[in-house]
Amino acid sequence: MNLTEISRYIADKISITPRSAAILGSGLGNFTECLTDKVVIPYEDIPGYPLSSVTGHAGEWVFGFAGNKPVICAKGRFHFYEGYTAEEAALPVKIIHELNCNSVFITNAAGCLNMDWHLGDLMLITGFIDYTFTKDKNNPQVHSIPLHKELDKIREIAKQQEIELREGNYVWTLGPSYETPAEIQDIISLGGHAVGMSTVPEMRKALERGMQVRGISCLTNYGAGMQDEALSHAEVLETTSRVNQKFTRLLAEII
Image 1: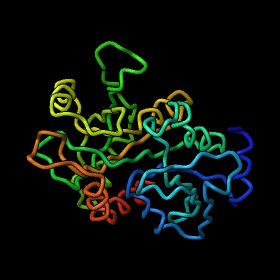
Image 2: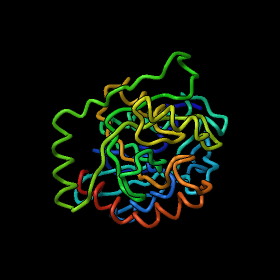
Image 3: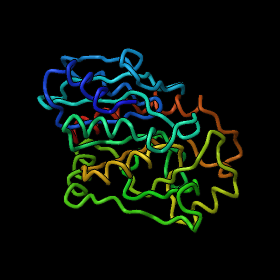
Image 4: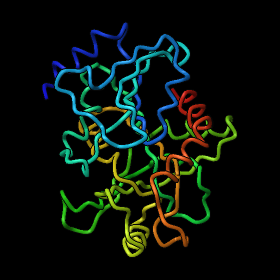
């Protein structure tokens, strides 16, 4: 994988440097339908580019305009459980940075760990926890996301859109299996509010590079053991499909 060559290939396909970028999680790719003057770049057309194998990830870059703001979106990410390293999972962020774009929205579908919240709610990620034990074998810690003045602006936009935007810590687990009920209870005790199998490698890389990072989780199911129901990826996609319009409205307005 040659980062410079991949980034140059994408840059040659788009008309202007993007002001913002988004990495779209499982089932959330419909956001790109709101963009105008779109350019679609399939991953398979990019020399040396890896492919996403997970249902709900289209596998393409989409450039376009949200209002008058140029935006580039990665529809499809790479997961540790697919055999990629954390560095490879962060590839979209590195490309966005190479394109001279310093603002990235990182989104995902996630399990909800608060029974007072509703499935289909959106959660602004204010911190993250690495629960993979791959980098640090000690007790996982919360790492805060520096949102500063952005936080009040995002809250106001959600209020104007009549969207109840939750706020909390996203927890990264290895996957591909869902967590056990015991793991879910441990994650809750550490301060986790949502759990999933992505996002943290991307957030770490964006923060390392001094980028402005904002994360949004779509809460698609309750964690294992919180309800007497089996978890499935089909349920995740059904929920994201139901709330796609709300998610698109919020993200477009923030951008």
